[in-house]
Length: 309
Image (cartoon, rainbow, N blue to C red; front, side):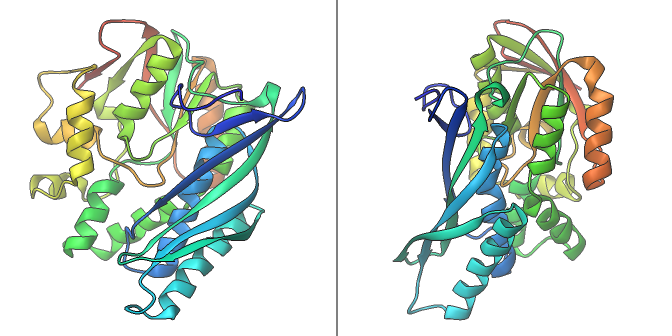
């Protein structure tokens, strides 16, 4: 075992031979959107993300399914599974089996197996003082998916959020390889601050973030002001406050937004500053989204993360 649970990395890593490493990860959750096919796509992209965050190539996947087979139509289950199949096909792999149970609330995700050469693995532990931090997807999915459940978000915002969550992180991982990134993690349930905090701890560094540079999906400001904040985001902020120094000028809503719990978020990449433009160009040409340069890595400090306005 090369990497297990101790480093808070994105996948387990097992050595198969001198230069061949096996990656394995699992993730599943309850629906975050109303459309079952879209839910399947998002859940599959989220599961695959851990392999990409480690610099790996997925090989195959297994389904994990919970479904109330006597209460909901089988057509809904079929649509969820088809979404997963199509997203796996986009990633170049097959879903070769899995396991299902009769469950009161639908749940779906994948066990994904991948591989990476030992000299190409990306981890969260290589960030260096002087590095810059770039984020490849906008934030706010936790707030917006909560608003979807409450029925108070507009269709354009829903579509933008679905598009972001469904997008594979494959191209971002390829770009991270090309610029020889020092550290990478994906931004999911623990939010930006939680996952960046893990990167700082694993790398024995600190990070400085500018709130004004953080990219957000549409409508999140007004949703937070209306009180649409998931419990996971509130828990994330309470945890992050233990190792984060916030600018006094940041409002309580802005603090919540910086800690929002993400589903199938982007990659957070630490790299040499001279590589930032190249990385941004690579991602923009592939996805149309300009990765945000949100901060920099500094020498280790009492506060793992500092957020200025």
